[in-house]
Image 1 (cartoon, rainbow, N blue to C red):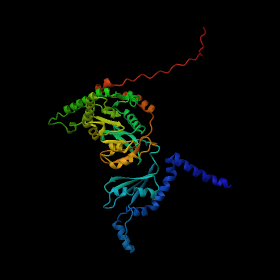
Image 2 (cartoon, helix red, strand yellow):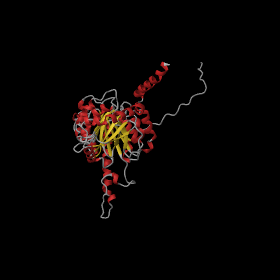
Image 3 (cartoon, helix red, strand yellow):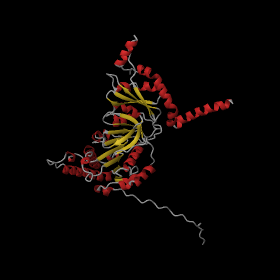
Image 4 (tube, rainbow, N blue to C red):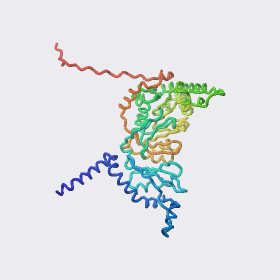
Length: 452
């Protein structure tokens, strides 16, 4: 009877331990969420007081206290609205006069320990109001992307941030991006998810892969152009520059502004053109950009300088023409040669995976978010796909790309091959796609050895 009575609690305890390791979302929904809510409610006042986040009481409360008691009116914790989520809790707070979101962010580590959650993040909702995002478990250990609603053109959900939000690569908001990462850091997985997401949109995808195409060749059915070495890249880049100039001529022709021209017909980029006149957007992927800078002899320097100049022109002027850049590499600094720093300055978005030295992390994030350099330099090797993202606004955060096999990504590109828009200038560079081998018929008769 004693063993039967102990068996139930032991089974529940074992199930909870197993769920916490194997299925953290299930453990959070059944055990972690009620426990965290109880800790938060029970210690809310004392925790806010200890962290210095209390606010002055309302006038009505002050009058009530003075009318009923002789006690001193003390600051009170801010009113918070608790909202459970599938990954944690959200608490919306109103700041006291003189406080700023940074004051709350400075107490995140103390709040995490007080309430027993994995992490606490702060996000500003509006002036005077912030939201505490309590994360119940490590979301980046096993990435599971939430169900996504429909995204706009050129917007692709690529990774999951550590605060349970989705990192969306939006080319309309951030036209050009630099992606750095050492070998086996997950840089190729990031690129794979991005290509698979763009493949389902009417976007022309162009690739430059100087590793003989081993990274981008599997996506050839969906690519509008592909260069697999420096010689082909030297031929492709001038065509893209000429396409950009032709699109500017199209915009200028539309800008023949007459006195009675409606305001909605005046535009300075391709997105203001009518749908039937707008050329399709182009996204250029450059894998291992350092290969375009390296030269073996002095006679190759002129070709290198020309290619770098064309990349810089695309980065400076391509956005209005609907041409966007995704530059990938292991290092990207002044040691690559003339024009490298100037090109990097045009790349607004930055994604830094695990790198081999701190100097490489500084190349990606040092000029936009210096405090993120140390975080990027300590990414462990056993977590491929983990990265630090940032942009020129100074914001940054950790994220991780979900696993997507090369076969699945290639299958998506084959299924969406018909969505590749027609860009006449890129037809000579369209990669050859061999036909899929037909299934070999199997013989129903058993072969007999020939006798002689």
